[in-house]
Amino acid sequence: MLTDIGGIGIYGVISICLFFAVFTAALLLTLRMKKPFAEKMGALPLDDSDASKKGVSHE
Image (tube, rainbow, N blue to C red; front, side):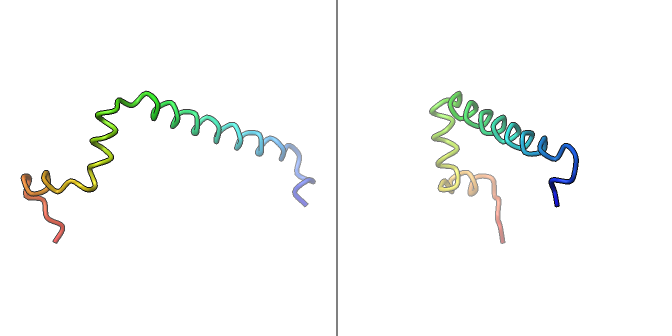
């Protein structure tokens, strides 16, 4: 059924290349990230001190 469509094989190649490019970019960004920044971002969801200083409320 899909094999009757001409050039359909290129979509598989494009999708694999796109996935590899995005995965490689994410990996490079992660490896180049500085350790203090990663620790700060990792602790951000657990840190309530900034919310009380700014008066941010979710209610």
